[in-house]
Image 1 (cartoon, rainbow, N blue to C red):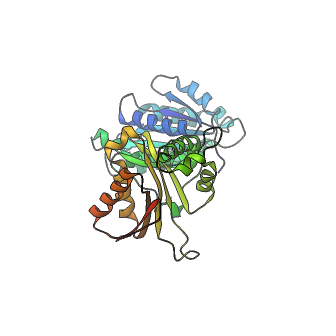
Image 2 (image 1 turned 60 degrees about the vertical axis):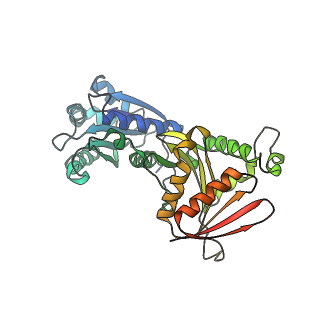
Image 3 (image 1 turned 60 degrees about the horizontal axis):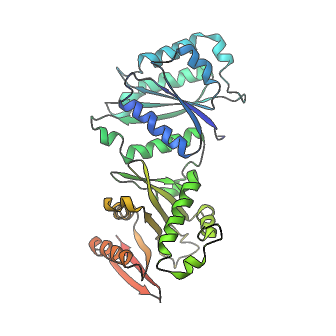
Length: 345
């Protein structure tokens, strides 16, 4: 699947402040983070025939609709019917590069997912086949009446995965799932999708650490970058998992995990928390502690972390987290660093 450069989102709900509109806004945030051009069309404000003409300008089309009576909204159905009946539309169903347009749906619903969405998804996939679109799949989010939960971290993670998939970029490998975690208000997004933001965060992190380790300050380049070689390691080594931390859909920090190949390096710990950095404005929300707890829920074995001795806040943080966990652990040290190995069970 080739990457796409531009995406259009068709909002098929009359409520611009409702959950379906919120799904569109969240999708737009991820597209913007990934530097993909996008346009949102409100089907209740635009002429449907105009929207159909515009579609051919895009590589991918996302149709967002609430599910009512097991099917889409009236304006989405009108768009589908008009395209279905218009023979000229089939001639324009390829994008400007002569490729099939990818198409997916974002649906909000009240019932359980399969029960609520199966009738519409079946009809929509057949419609895509008829008009010449390449059907990708769906993003399905259940509306339980809890607005905060609807836009919570778990559903934002699903939105990011859907956007990555339909755009054909950096789809997560199965072996990344051990590192990909989320909590009530936070989630992780792949650093590969927004390297500039990750690099800015990393530079702030290294600047903060340089107060406790002189050698870090000495590693700053003339253009004020700290240890740029380490960044390339994060992107190139399969064992390293760099993420941007999001808190309520806002950039809040970074984290880097390492999962060594135990067949090649049996003496290594099972996994490492190499770096964790939360911006000051978010530290009162205890995001770092939640990330660690969720990681330990998902992964068992020896977890290794380290803290600079001069960074007393970091040392207290780790000792507090480890002791509260109740796990067995060992501590080693050299002149500058404490090394912790925690037996996560």
